[in-house]
Image 1 (tube, rainbow over the protein chains, first blue to last red):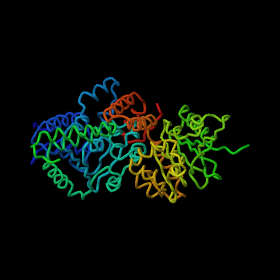
Image 2 (image 1 turned 180 degrees about the horizontal axis):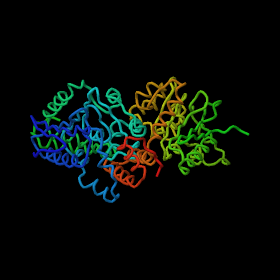
Image 3 (image 1 turned 180 degrees about the vertical axis):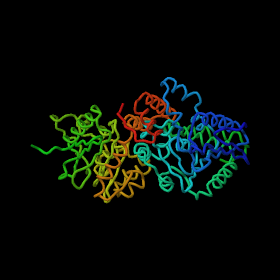
Image 4 (image 1 turned 30 degrees about the horizontal axis):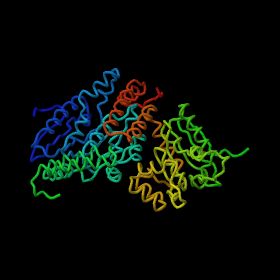
Length: 246
Length: 259
């Protein structure tokens, strides 16, 4: 893997670690970061050595949002639309059949929070701050936030975050279901790695099947979702030994 | 002249809708439902207000609605027409601008359905919320069977419908039925504060966020993501987007024009 400008990438014992690395601008997300994340995530998707992924941020923050010095300039809407779909990083996040863990500290704002919501598990440090300030900037979320937040924490809480733009701290984020665990700041990476290490011990095909069931099931009528679940289970079991118990 | 069943007061970007039949617990009457429809239509067309607060005069938020009975009287309008004219929650739900229910007291049956049609809910301590329709041999008929599960999840919704149990404000907050609980005397200020937070955002952005969240909830995740992307790109043609970003980069307060 080549070295990158905006992220750090390393791999150890089945865990891929992606560290957002623009601490001088609070790890603001820009097009270079998009392209580098895209490259890394595609590699992670294909790399059979990788069985879990941890995404974290270097410096005092996880990610304070999109780099507005860059995304602020509005090209024509036609060009903007082309740019949005030329590298669909967010769909790539959703289509990786491996568990993604976000390890969040400091500011986790706008696209930073959206990136975290595209992960499967979110661990926060006690100092983490979450907010969706887009409306105050004349923007709306564009990394899936209007869709992933309601699906994770419900309509009411999502609308509160999105419409009032008010920040919530780690404790509140835990109460609302924005994150699954809160740990002291100095134990964040250790805990995230420990969780990821546990995830590497699971049957990878089963993890991928579970992710698929949860990704598509909620969009289907129940009877179709149950059929999909059955298909996934049969596919999983038929590839295993005869004595596999259900 | 009879007292108005609903009072609308507009102050800057905030419209306050007050249910105004406190002597009957603000139960929704035909007049009240009609008035709510007119007001919501007007707010959507005029485009002056950016946030709506819905609240009740007196002790209750709204204790329910009319009893729907088939009186067998052939001179009265058919039942389906009467149902339509009693319903009011879709008027609130159809608002393009953001809405907040300031639940000053009990929100029961149709009263809770009105609150559920708002985007956000603040409840006063001591308020009770719930559905007792089933014990009267009827089901909620102003959106409750659909909006409650979408707000608190299926299991909690079924429990509340089937048992008729009322939840207190604090529990309502814990289960995501309301966003915030405050002492009654602080309720109106808390609602105004929330409205001010929303109206400091760019008007079109606020409406697009609301649209993306609500419409997206009925779509597959892919479809929802496409809708969000399209709306965010359309927004690039607005002056407010330019203003918002420039203000941020120059560390000043934005001045949004709604264009």
